[in-house]
Image (cartoon, rainbow, N blue to C red; front, side):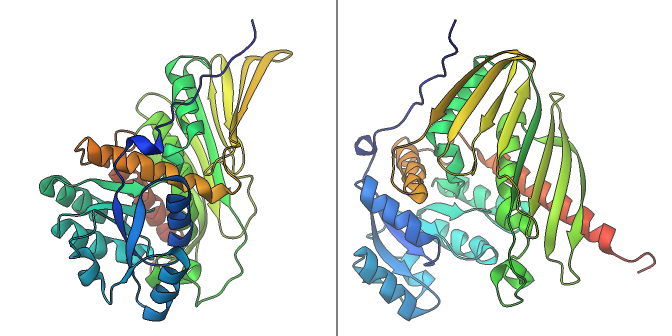
Amino acid sequence: MTLTLPTPRITDAESVPALRWGVIGVGIAGSFVAALHAHTPQRAVAVTSLRPERAAAFAAKHGIATVHPTVDALVADPDIDAVYVATPHPLHHAQALAAIAHGKHVLIEKPIAMSAAEAREITGAGRRAGVLVMEAMWTRYLPQSDIVRQVIADGLIGDVHLVQADFGFVAPPDPAHRLWDPKLGGGALLDAGVYPISFASSVLGAPIAIHAIGATLPNGVDTRAHMAISYSGGGVSLLSTSLETILPIEAQVMGTKGRLKVLSPFFGPTGVEVAVGQFTDVEVATWRDERYPGMYDAMCGEAIAFASYVQDKRTESPLHPHAEVVAVMATIDEVRAQLAAASTPRGA
């Protein structure tokens, strides 16, 4: 019998509300807004930035009518349904809480905050206010992720025992760049490591034991981390992230009947390869995502999902619930603590 992969379940962009978005920050937000406008009826209608000239240029480029002078002015705008927080990590907590306080649904770039405690406060505030709070882990809303979920749920690769995932690249050291500045949330874990940790969490759940090795600079910025994590169901993940090493950026799930690979770069729209069997008796099937001309066009998927959850009056994503968002941040907290302790001189 020929191995066949499940068909991804994709929500029609026209079937969800056309939300009016306010955008805070103009970095990665450019890719999000371009995808939003190109592939959905939803629209960014206002923007703000710490640098007004950048906000004005962003608005002109993307056809956004309103430039607000401050975050407070944007979140108070009655013509906005949802707020997209796309600023550096340390700003997420305060800006998300400000949006929630004004009754806005909020999509927060990953990582959602700087710690599990901040993540817990943000998600708790959203539940109390009755608004949707979602981390912008766009990987969860890609068609390939739905294939992964179906393959595992259907038992196609058997009982899952091991997950491997990594995300690493070489970033030239620059104290002024956000990756190397602790005040801007620098480090491999918060920028790239959140992806493999979140992927493993989506397959195996919350961890019960974490062991990490790596390196941390004197200013507290982690430059690499390698993690062995065990889970209550008996599974294990082996994860890596780095600012110093070029890694494959792949994710694999291995079970008693076969294995699944999410092609590189696994965090974006690529494809899925499933192999069932072992040694020379293996059947292989591959699905590739060829919908869009550019990788970041697929960011529209998280916006479509977000709008569908607003329509359903949800306060959290069923594919990425608050408890899991907090658990992923707790894992990052623990890994950072282990790396910091290992780099502290004895007796210090």
